[in-house]
Length: 287
Image: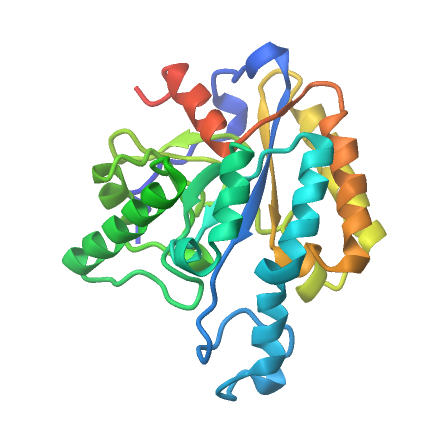
């Protein structure tokens, strides 16, 4: 099947991208703030119990995120001046309103991330339009800001998702992790902003079992190479985090070390995915 959503464009043949203040790398934290429905299988640390209903082992691991882990992560973000780009399940507004309050006080960026992380959007267009409308309007009501970006639960989309999101006033998606720069989609007004499955704590810590010190080195290596790549054209570095993973007590100091290296590195624009998308659009890249 031909990819009609976006065109092939080798990074070596594009007009240069410049970031504010002459920065070479635009850095943002994609913080997944999610709700998992009790009794539905989802992201798990142990596959042996995923068929049990309920599944206290895996649900409790996930539920540690909003109860405990995110609060120590917030302290780390505050220490390093990081405003996360929050990938927000709309159910969080009802389930964990204290997290919304904390983010509003810190001017976080809010992206739509589905209703919860136990279900994905329906494939029938009319049903998906109603689903997306509910997600976007719920987030807008709770945060006071209409989301501009989208990341699907499990990075899921249908063929009509970007166009439906554009109808709702959104202008970018993170689901297509195919580049180090934003790029235009073949949907009027819509773009893709880089996200990462590789620089992602869920994969690194749970699938690949890296250590905390390995995580810090991976973050450093990612930035160092992107900085080298950006000599003539800017790059984007996304760090994807989940509270129930990186917010564990024994990992927090490694998050501190990683953030300290990145935000103090010369030529880094410490920003949000919203600001990256806005800067790219303002430069006329969507024309």
